[in-house]
Image 1 (cartoon, rainbow, N blue to C red):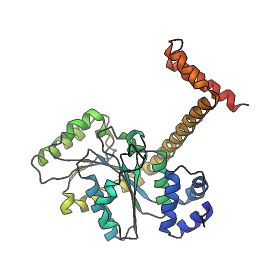
Image 2: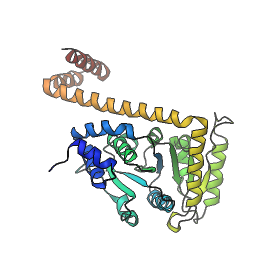
Image 3: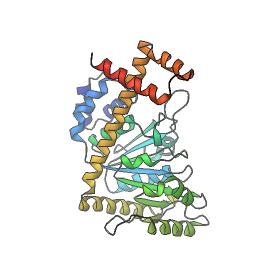
Length: 323
């Protein structure tokens, strides 16, 4: 018998992993029944610390996430991990590479791992990903780690949805220069030079520290992002990284910025949902009414520019809503 949204809600609050997994699947499939459960769960969220793990491919984000999760488990803290993988071009689902690499955690009942497709969202984050963060938060996870795609695109969106953002680099990857070009330097609360046994690690650390020291617009009261060296495969530097995350959370609480970040996340989440709903409404209306084909024809004939066409769609939707 299929569980109702209320059943899933009740079971999840009692610690039922299958209910959590089922609800996440409904969210990923955009099943309308998930909304009722999410609505009820919202007031139970807000207790977990959300950590973003971003950086270039090959820098060792997955191994670092795994080691960090193991550290938290040694402290008897429960962990949720969301791996935002590149979506499959055939199914739209995640490729599950990260979850394969985290098999050593799979037997721990206090660690919940979920791979999700980025579904083309900027930075690999989506409305579904935020819903899953909320589910794991309400599920009672003390720490929720969101590992982003790392497919070379600017991954600055992650800062909107996390309390602490970790940027992972490695020696010799040119990441330091890319950080300046892509604006990644602006989002990091903690910087990690992983694979620090490689040649060039001290230089990579020095370059990052210099960039952070000379970053414009930094006040004396602001958080000073540390640069930490790790060798994730060997488990080295993990204690220092966890301590930096704890220190950053303490700073957020003492400065009042934790509440500010929560408001920022709620606003970003609201805008994401609105963008999705408006986009779907526009697509559906244009397809159903046949207006879209006429607009595209007029654009192709250079009778109307794309911006003016978009204005017409907005006016059409407003009139349609006012019926």
